[in-house]
Length: 70
Image (cartoon, rainbow, N blue to C red):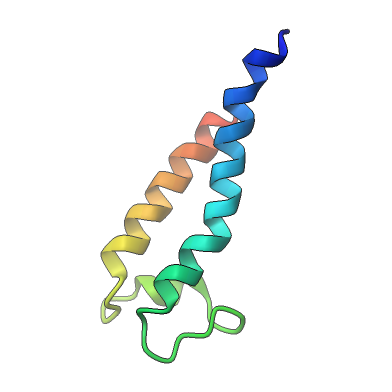
C-alpha cells in the first residue's frame, strides 16, 4: 500500500489519542473542584456536571474515531 493511504488513518488515530487527554483537561477546568490527575472522566459526565453535554458529545465523537481505526 501507498504511504498516502495510511496518512488519513494515522491522523484520525492521532486526533483521537490527543483528544482523549486534552478534552478532559479543558472541560475539567469548567467543573468546580475537578482535578484531572485524581478524578475520573466519568465524573464530568454526571447529571450535575456543567460540562455533561460537551463531554458526552466528545466521547461519542471519540468512539466513532476509534471505530474508523479498525
